[in-house]
Image (cartoon, rainbow, N blue to C red):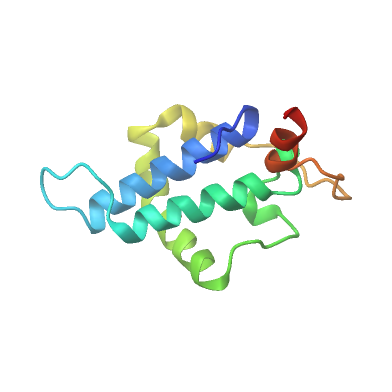
Length: 125
């Protein structure tokens, strides 16, 4: 797992919370606290894509982004997760849901050079 700060940290917390809600509703048995393998793999995939997002801290929401970095299978999975978990986020994580819903981040006209979380982390070394 990578360490995110700022907007990317909020993005990761939001997708992680949504996956947990989805997994609990679809895959986990009563009393089980860990995620299933499929959902854990999806969180790792989303984590990697956030880490490599070329927009870095200026990342627009994925549905507004001109770059679709998720593979088709994961994009379909993300849509399914968000459709199920989105309404439930308002009750379980109202602050994250509000930030996600009211995100006014505009899409930058050009992609900044080396601003991904990965590049920023590597520059600090």
